[in-house]
Each structure stands twice: as structure tokens, then as C-alpha cells.
Length: 94
Ligand code: 2BA
Image 1 (cartoon, rainbow, N blue to C red):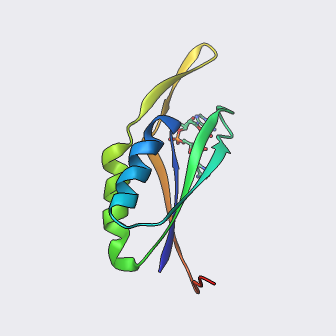
Image 2 (image 1 turned 135 degrees about the vertical axis):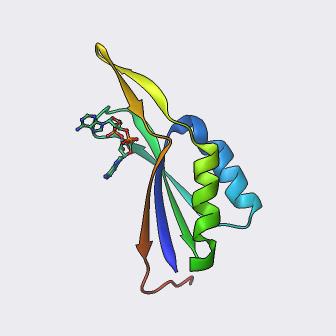
Image 3 (image 1 turned 180 degrees about the horizontal axis):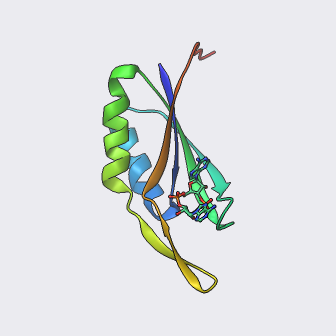
């Protein structure tokens, strides 16, 4: 089992969660703040069996897009999503 931690832009969250839920994935949504821009983004926690990782990552890739964001006098390109995939030693639902 793996834990996918994905930081996505707020504009893309609803459709990502909707699609993951429709495909029987479980998702936790956390409000988060980017350290550089100091503006809100969303962190998704998604626990998945190994064989489902590609499906989840592809969903995030398809539904999240990069955007230019104003930061003072310059534009910053924020990526579609940042994704971490972490090994889970143990998973329990009690
Ligand atoms: P922020 O930290 O607010 O960063 C927003 C965007 O600003 C980044 O987009 C990147 O294009 C730019 N940026 C970040 N740090 C920079 C720096 N030191 N100098 C110049 N430009 C910089 P993304 O890379 O797509 O990241 C989007 C959000 O994902 C980040 O928001 C942060 O919340 C998270 N993130 C990205 N990489 C991460 C990492 N290695 N660890 C933890 N969180 C990460």
C-alpha cells in the first residue's frame, strides 16, 4: 500500500475528488498554504493499493493544469500538481 500526497491548486480540487470518488478511491482533503506564494492550495491524502497508483496519478495529471500567478511584479508558474508517493508499512481501519 502507498500514500499519495498531492498538492493541487484549489481550482482543480473539486473535479479531482469527484473523479477519484467515482472510481472508488478514498480521499482526505486538507487546506494548505504554499510556502513561497503564501496563498492557499489543497493537499490530498489518498491511500491506495500499489496497482492503483498509476490510475490515481493519471487522474491528477489529467485534471490539474499549471497556471501563471502574479507575485508582486513577476509572474510565477505554479505547476499542475506536486505528487509524493510514500510506502506505508501498516494500514488499519478501526
Ligand atoms: P508554493 O510554495 O506557494 O510555490 C508556488 C510556486 O512558486 C511553485 O510551483 C514554483 O513554481 C514557485 N516557487 C516555489 N518556491 C520557489 C523558490 N524558492 N524560488 C522560485 N520559485 C519558487 P510548484 O512547484 O508547482 O509548487 C506548488 C505548491 O506545491 C507549492 O506552493 C507548495 O505548496 C507545494 N510544493 C511544491 N514542491 C514541494 C516540495 N518539494 N515539498 C513540499 N511542498 C511542495
